[in-house]
Length: 308
Ligand SMILES: [Zn+2]
Ligand SMILES: [Zn+2]
Image (cartoon, rainbow, N blue to C red; front, side, top):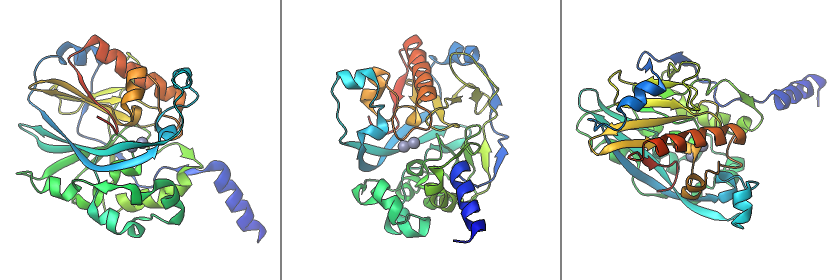
């Protein structure tokens, strides 16, 4: 192998790459808020509805979704196995602002033509698309809505959260957490092409204007519509830009955790995800911050990343 290619390959392996090379731009939607402002009103009934939809059933190794080195996992003698999970999308309706999605479910086009979206043999060995059982593809959900979706609030950029984008018009803005596309990792090299292909055609990702620190273990809180109805919470660890969403509905608050916690067992025991998470220690801190918020406000109903 020519020396220059060897040097390039070595430096790529050492430095890795970002989760995507898609451009980002600061979001004009959303304004920096605070933990105190959010907690002052969170328990009051609000006007936004949340409909959680199971887009697909799937099975993945539990070792990806639970830290198998955690003492509680060891004490419970949990062994690695294929765990049944779901790929969710959440439909938010704001009476004045219209329909928004949190995460995107999964598109039939993506499942039927995975190669078009960069799913090669190597990714299939990890991702196992053949284990996915479609329940409601993204297009069939959005086409039932009386008005078009106004934006997608992403919890992070893992493929199972953006796999519905082929069904979303490319003029619909996509929102992500801060620094989601900043860190470089060797593991991102394997999924870069797939994530880029799912995002291509869409405008630059809009990043929430999180202030640096809001206390309570959160790395920033944004009041999305400026009316105290929906908040984005910066909860890094699973990915650097991981974002949870808290919504005030007529029946009380709903927390959408994203993959801060994939599983019910992980949430109940305060155990963070394992192999699928970039930084387990930071993920644990974010998980405990969300659990503490729910303990302070027990009316909050929790909807996890991949299980009911
Ligand atoms: Zn994830
Ligand atoms: Zn996920």
